Length: 139
Ligand code: AMP
Image 1 (cartoon, rainbow, N blue to C red):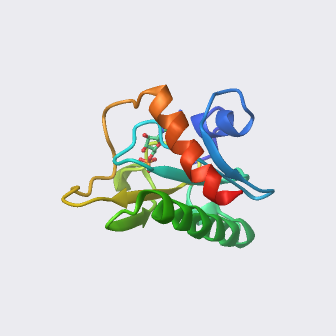
Image 2: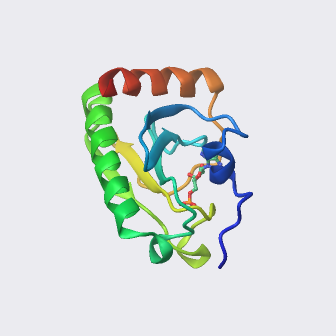
Image 3: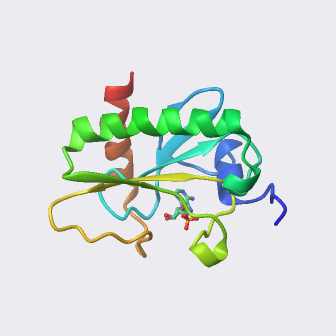
């Protein structure tokens, strides 16, 4: 599959679409998932035109992992989850729905069932305050 410059995450990177950013460096961007599976569900994307792991340059992959750990550490400190799922899907058949490579950071709280996606768009104010709490740790 070719990379589509108009996918939602490409638009978020170009700031053509809003997002609640928690961390950014020259290789990666981390922002709140708009339909969080749990409080603090964050996505980390590379600033490269990569559909999935198979066309993601190793330099960017390393940067994504580093950012993922950094943000997951912050989420752990702020929300004290019982566990944290770190996962990513490759290909529509694997459940991938946005075709710009991304890592999910999904905090798990007591009794929260694992599911890769939610159906409800979260309230803007909730996403903003959640992002703010994570950002405070990352400064
Ligand atoms: P995946 O199925 O792994 O491709 O996951 C795509 C994720 O992107 C889902 O968890 C969606 O909730 C999330 N998502 C879709 N559109 C947006 C958006 N505009 N801002 C933030 N997250 C989004």
